Length: 83
Image 1 (cartoon, helix red, strand yellow):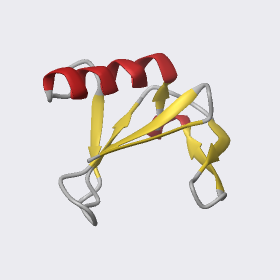
Image 2 (spheres, one colour; image 1 turned 120 degrees about the vertical axis):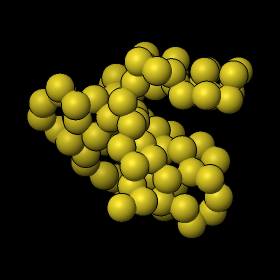
Image 3 (spheres, one colour; image 1 turned 90 degrees about the horizontal axis):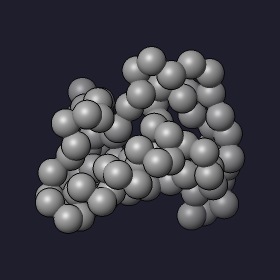
Image 4 (cartoon, one colour; image 1 turned 180 degrees about the horizontal axis):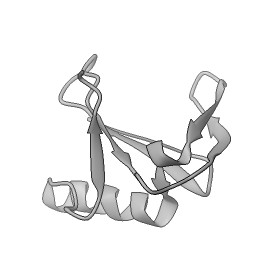
């Protein structure tokens, strides 16, 4: 399962094995600051640290690689949210 939420500049990308799985999300360890504007399906608007998201162009590459080849790009860092 793949989840993507964007504010137009950056994106939170989540990869999960099944419904309810905390999964993993792509990170940008060197990024500073935070941004808002991430609107969820229920109307809630979230704010994330930039280090917990990736630039939108990177997110599009990640999604393309996952869909086309079934793997995450080696150039993108991931955080395991399973604990």
